[in-house]
Structures are given as structure tokens and as C-alpha cells.
Image (tube, rainbow, N blue to C red; front, side, top):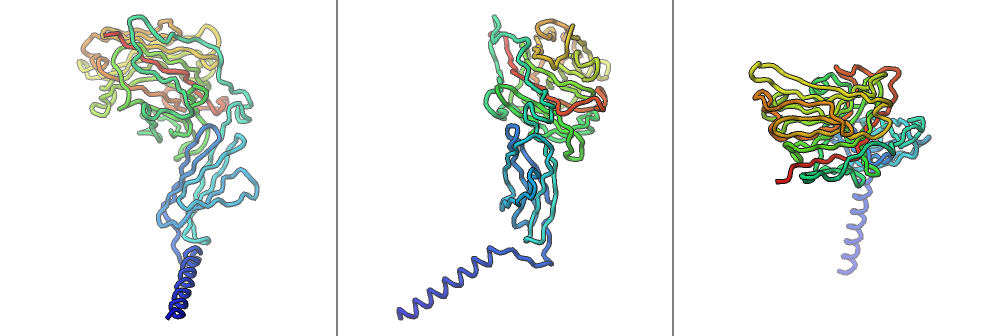
Length: 380
């Protein structure tokens, strides 16, 4: 009886080993179907670490090549998620394969641009400015309602949301960029939104657009945003706000407050605009009003400036470095949009109806660097 049980147990162990070995081998059936619907996305952490995520239907596993080494070994990831750290700036073609077996697979690729601060892709020229205007952390008769000083090493997604893609007709402006998360970094107490010349989602440029919609919104008060701007033909940075009822009434009935916009290019990198957009019910037309201001010397990329909005029940006033350049009376009934909550939008667009397209003089990447955004409201 004992001998029989020992032989039986030994037979069972051998069978289990055979099953395990068979499961560990690829099925090299040449008639196997290649996985379908392969998609490859990536997220940049800091300036050099990239997490790649590949998904496909009927894939048994995934392999990756990161494009930064000759005779690069293949990296396998059964769940399709893998991270890689690049050691130098540049553009890298990353190849992902979704495998049914080792010889039956589908393949796609994406180009990743690594832009280390002060790296070769900038000609070593990019440095975050160390000078410029700043504003106080408090004002008499006002309390600090909200701020983001961009501490830490990632965007605070409790307050901000990334908007992705190219929107509807280039966000209504025929813009040329594809918005994605990995063009945004938070480093050394600064938010950096970077516009790059790279292919993604069928577009030739990428950038980021972040909003506080559904998380942080405000009616009336003082807004201070300290930022250094990008430059160049076709570059369109904006610090602005939309009415929180946007989803219900759409634009322009929700109202729009452009605290700062710049359309870059030769002779234009020194000028910013502040504008309001709304729907004038009495005339049944879209209405706009704006003003601009120009630096006496230099451009807005040279150093930090503070773009401020002071808003109450009677008027909206815009400032650069505490110098007023825009004011509008919002008491008429047609401007009722501006007596409700608004949320923030920060973005760097590329191209569009207003700035036009980049040209041979436009250097990439371009960056908008934000030191802080602060919202103050009157003490109750």
C-alpha cells in the first residue's frame, strides 16, 4: 500500500511539472491570431523617467524596446506596464509588441522627447529665471482663499485636472497641439508646461492644459499668478478662467476671463493681453472686450512677472507687476456672466487662428514656468 501511494504521488508530481512547463512555453502555432487594438501610451515623471502602458485584445504578454541603446535587449512585461529612465535628452522611438506567442505579435511605436533642463535639446540655454517681480503673501482686508505654490514633485491632482487631446476643431481655435500629461512637470517649486515639436495623436506638436474645474472655483477677489512665459512664432500661452456653469450653458454664455494671453513671435513676445468674452443677451451676439500692455524693455521670457486680476461686483481690473492696463464695468445686465464662480485654466497652445503657425524661427521646446497662483477674497 505505501509503495503504491509513493508511486502515485510521484506520478502526480511529474504531471504537474509537465503542465507548468507547458504553460511557461509560448504557443508558436503559426496560425495563432495576432492581438488586435494595440495602443501605447506613456507618462513622464520628472524629466527623464517614462512609464509606458500598452493594451491590446487577446495578448498573452508585451515586449518593449526603448530606443536609447544599440543592440538593446527586449524588455518583457506581462501586464503591459513598464518604466524606463533615459540618461540624455533627445527623441527616442519606443517599440511595443503585443504577443500571442514569441513569433505571432502586433507592433506599434511612439516617439518620446526627453528634455532635461539645460540639456542639449535646448542648446544648453534654458534656465528657469531667477529674477523678476513678486507680490506679497497677504493683503490688508483680504484672506487667502486658495493657493498653489507647486511644491513637491508632481501636480496636485486634488486641485487640477489634465485635459487631453486636441478638443473640438483644435479647441475651437484650430490649434495644432495634442495635450497630454507628460508635458507638465513640477520641480523646485515651479510648474513647467512644455510645448514640444513631436508627433502624438495625429498632431505634430504636444503640450499640456490643466484646469481646476469641479475642484476649485471662485467669485470675486484678487488673483496673482507669477510666471515666466515662452516665446516664438505660433506659441500661445494663456492663464485664464471659464464660468463654472460651462457644461450647462456652454461658451460664450458661461463667460471667459483671460487674465493673460500672449501670441509669440518677433516683436510680439513683449506684449500680453487681458480680455473678457461673453454673450450679450440684449443684442443676441457674442461680445468681447480687451486691452494689451507692452514691456518697456525685454520680453516676458526674460524674467518672472505677476499677472493679477482684481474682481468685484462692479468691475474687473487686470495688472502686470501691479501696473493697471485693463478695466471693464461689469454692472450692465449683459455682463451677468461675471457674477458667478469661475475655474482656472493654464495652457500653452501651439498655432491657431490668432497666433498662426510656428515657422523656421520657432525653437522647441518652449516652456511656461509658473511660480505660484494665489486667490485672495475680502474678509467677511
